[in-house]
Image 1 (cartoon, rainbow, N blue to C red):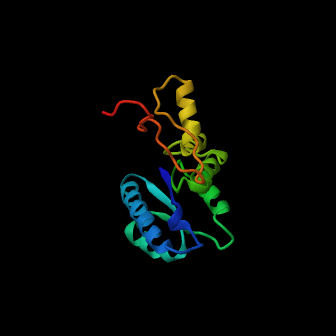
Image 2 (image 1 turned 60 degrees about the vertical axis):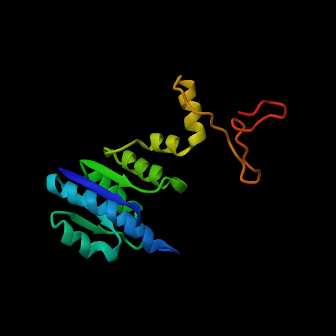
Image 3 (image 1 turned 90 degrees about the vertical axis):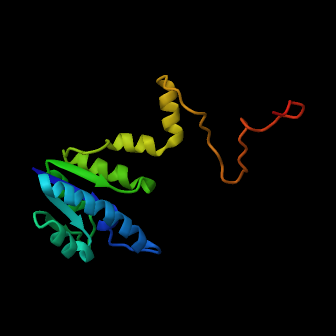
Length: 165
């Protein structure tokens, strides 16, 4: 069984400020799943050049592919198409996780995790609260808030003239 393992920071070619600390966290997650899946499947991995040797050392059974300088999408899609399953680890921000899950789905792959639609919905906490309420699921009050306005938690604000506790 082939399992495509992808961790966004370990596949990233565009480091920025604070990148190495984030990649270290990404590597911790990726290393754990690589070790686990290496025991029961043949992992396929897409990683940035600095991590190639480390991935091959940690999991000799893994089929490791280097992220091409031209970008990751074509290589990602090819591995997702070839694999029996795909595990995608990526940040929810900027639609990164939802996009990669959608790539797997578009290639006919099977995700070990949520669908791109579920990722997109749970990434939008206000939309998720509305969806849960529509379906009768008890949900805490959730409101939109502008960063330009101070937040007031009205549930704990004492109204003038009301008794103190």
